[in-house]
Length: 164
Image: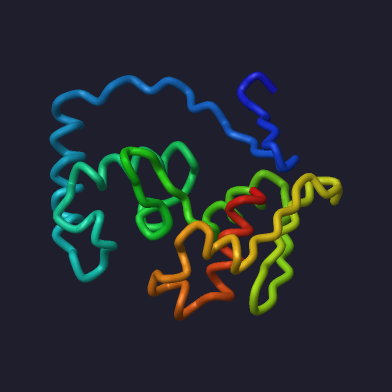
């Protein structure tokens, strides 16, 4: 397919990304409407992650990301954070996008490690990553609140992100 790119990660995992069709820049009227919508959304601070509260520009950017990946704006706002200008997609969204592309992700977890196994559309394993508590300690993650309170879930998320 001319509109698909397949990238092989060092672990053997496969990622398929659709190249978006070129979209013309919005007209000034369209841009004003988009900004008005984003400004209104940004005021709903009790419903938004902090990065999007009172940040209409951030909402416009995540809205573009959502369009490019075929997910709703609210799904993207809950699962995508921009760090130094780059989107960081949480493991739940990565798994959903992989499954939509025909891959499955199986997880085996324990108290000190998690293994994520990615299988292609024909059930053939294309990637496997085990992430341990020692890996998290080396990365300086275990002192963070989420890691202390939800160690098992964070190990699963880390293994999933790396495998996909």
